[in-house]
Image 1 (cartoon, rainbow, N blue to C red):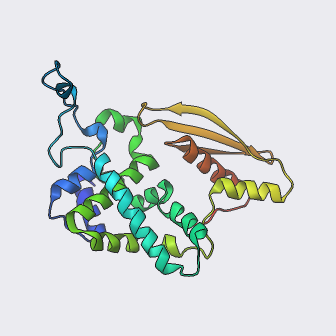
Image 2: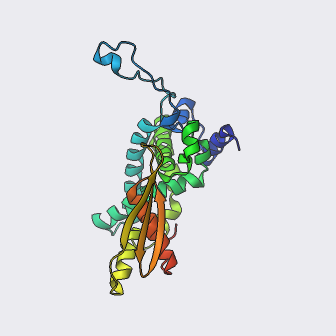
Image 3: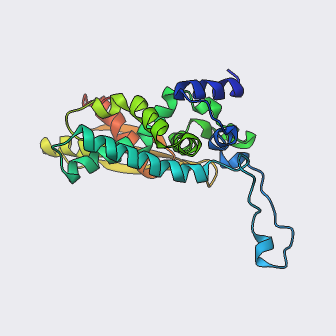
Length: 249
């Protein structure tokens, strides 16, 4: 599938045709693919600032900012309706999970978003397209673009359709893999797990961390775009090895 075909596939999955295609283009543009613009006059402060690119020619970082807030609001609204008996603590735990990078990256995978992202060739070679952080950021940017293009109702429709299985999957608020692993070990009277950062590769703005966690004589390995997410992935790997599956999507 070509990138153009992947973009059309994403639009079809959203069930929305953008009236302003520039918003969609911007949402799917990684910052590595945006040429740096130098100020024309180095003699003053304004001249040293990068010129603002026209709409649709910048990276998806600004739309990511909007999409993060849109998703947070829509998810809070939905949880308030879905769990009328729960108080702030339980609702907050659910909300934090549902807007987290792992869930966003999984939703991005569901609609084939990775193949639609425009990434510079040198970053493509570094393998950043498959990073959960890159896919999650693009998913937030896509929601921001959808909101700006059509308003809150279409964004609400997409969120409730794509996140439906996640919000319904469990009768209990989600627990992070690190918490599940710690509780399992403490319940057996075992020592706490030991996490070790073994490597950090890739470009400075998109590093890939590798973490190993050890407990019960076994080891779990995780790789992600942040140390925290790599630790979570390592805990998930170890839980599977000791027969304690994490909550499934």
